[in-house]
Length: 80
Image (cartoon, rainbow, N blue to C red):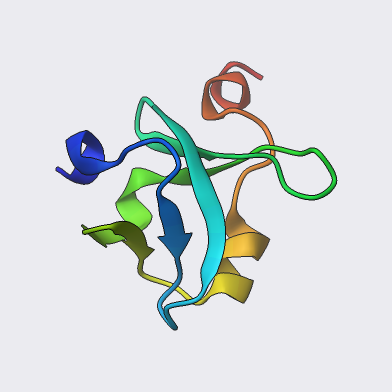
C-alpha cells in the first residue's frame, strides 16, 4: 500500500502531472491536503493514488479530483 510512502508536504499531482494539492497528513484511508487559498482542508481517498515517488500521483485529472474531493473529514461523513 502507498500509505506508508506518503509524507507531509509532498506535492499531489493529477494524471496530467499538474499539482493540485499538498499533503498535510495521512488520516486512515485518506490523505488530508493542506488548506487551499480560502482556508479549507480537503481529503482524497488513498484509492486514488497510483504511485508515490517524490510526489503523490493520482489516477484522475485535477479538475475531476477537485470536484470529487471531500471537504469534511471522512470519519465525520460516516457518523452523520
